[in-house]
Image 1 (cartoon, rainbow, N blue to C red):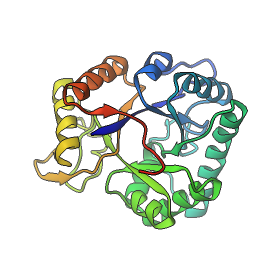
Image 2: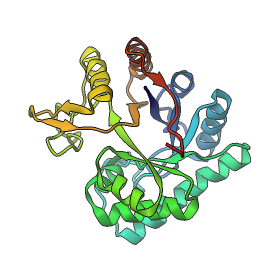
Image 3: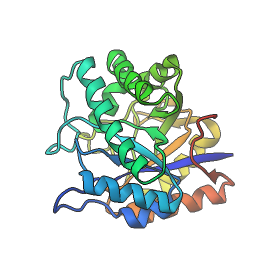
Image 4: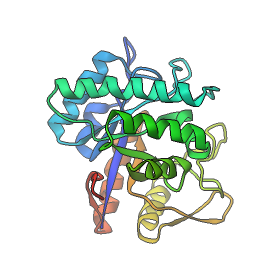
Length: 254
């Protein structure tokens, strides 16, 4: 039994530093690099690609809404055509840095509110999946497990990876509890790691309101902007090892 362990990285920009990327990269099997719209900048993108290449981990693009001030976590009423264009623009930019570093882009995972919208909005999900397919049909599309983005990617012929959030609570509908809710983020690391291992083995977890929901997880996300991210990743790695679950990137042939 194995699973991918991913983290959202490359979110610093200009004079602002966010996250401990250099410390986290050696502990994960894949990374999702911000592409300059919600966070990141060309210098950070290039540097993060180089770090990921040196560590031998899978490199993914992390496109988000054009909302630097709101960190891509605010709603934007973009049309499907706009979603397609913004996603294609961002993943093509990161792909360019990968090519310059003589490595390859492995996957695409939308960020923040774009990710949440793609989980429930069919038209938005289809636009995102089409952008990924048009750049490279061999790319893996990462989305919330059981979401409309996974459906759209599969319908388009993409390899898709269902994602599980180790540090987030879920609604009874299988979506993430909105961040405006005080219980959106799990701070009890023991509970989080135990729930994670159970989800991998049983494909089910308890929603915040107590219902059992089905989760088909191919990859686990830990947020890099969490101040305790490095310690949390180490704890997750140990819990997976104790449960005889290997850590490996998602393959395009899965």
